[in-house]
Length: 170
Picture 1: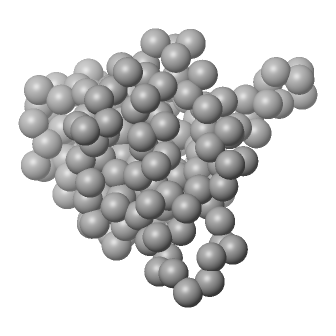
Picture 2: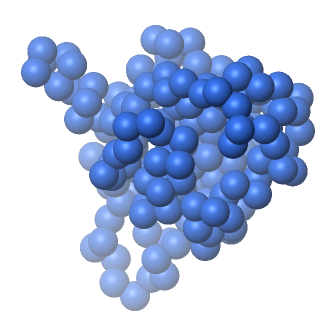
């Protein structure tokens, strides 16, 4: 089995004029909402073999919050500029270079790319992967290069709002 986690970065600030887009920091609200998602991952005892993140500050800081929460070493996060600049199709290339010894992979990045990327694996498409949202897909294969042709199952789609609604009984 291979498991893919597609995580969108937390809510970031647009208040800093004059800085490049990839330098935008997270809002405190975004950090707090990501911790809700981390709590869910902890409850599900999620173990991730490899986290790859966009180099953008907001994505990398989100990856670090998640890593810390699930006990993944922050210094083992692989940073990729290709996630920031990539398209959904270009993200597929990661599967061909990934060691089959890695059973679970989390990619942390940006919309609209991550919504398109997730939808290629989802039977029920989503309109938007919200900030701090995560899509988890399990593939019935032992080889990453076979994920496109293997049977798969959506394990969960979570976001801070979904988790909040579940807690309140909505």
